[in-house]
Image (tube, rainbow, N blue to C red; front, top):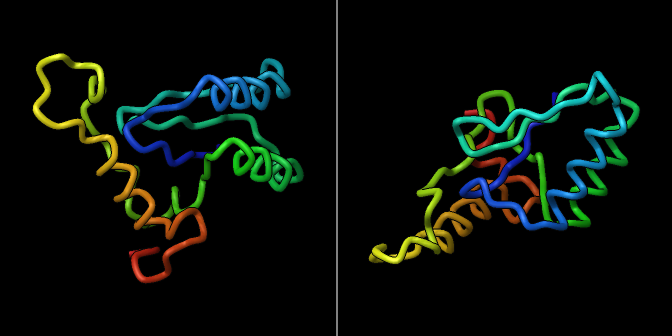
Length: 115
């Protein structure tokens, strides 16, 4: 299983198409869970394919860095952020900044990993 880091659970159409292509590769064994922490977990991934998948994730602006073990989990937010006409503040930029801090812009942040 490969867990992703998706601040606010938001993906672009390009990112979603890439994720679908990864899942489709594994046929009946491949599937994805959308979690309560606004994340995707891709199931059926085999170890030899991981480097290629990680490159593809990076190419579409996604990462799975620091998404397992005892790491800080995916920052969650209001799923209606940015589209709710009654919101006072769109929190998506702050959630993205927090996620970038947690993963050091997808390079890894050892100061807060494996806590």
